[in-house]
Amino acid sequence: MNIGIIGTGGIGQALAGHIAKAGFETIVSNSRGPESLAALVSKLGPRAKAGTRQEAAQADLVVLAVP
Image (cartoon, rainbow, N blue to C red):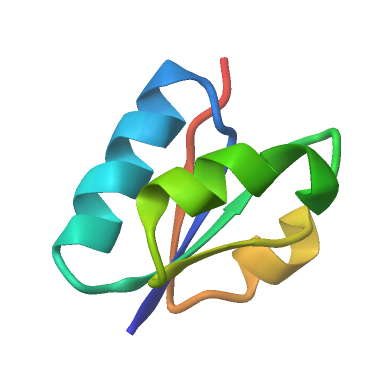
């Protein structure tokens, strides 16, 4: 199962950390594009990757973490 997270503010980052640590493939995205998420993805580990909002929305489960 892979999980997409749209929004990488405080809540999105916290969820991504817990989800990746639990062993799920995680796709994080934001409005600025995947390039802006390099530091977050390296912090989250090998189960996380940055993607576009469209890629995150194609995941098995999608979390919308925006205001």
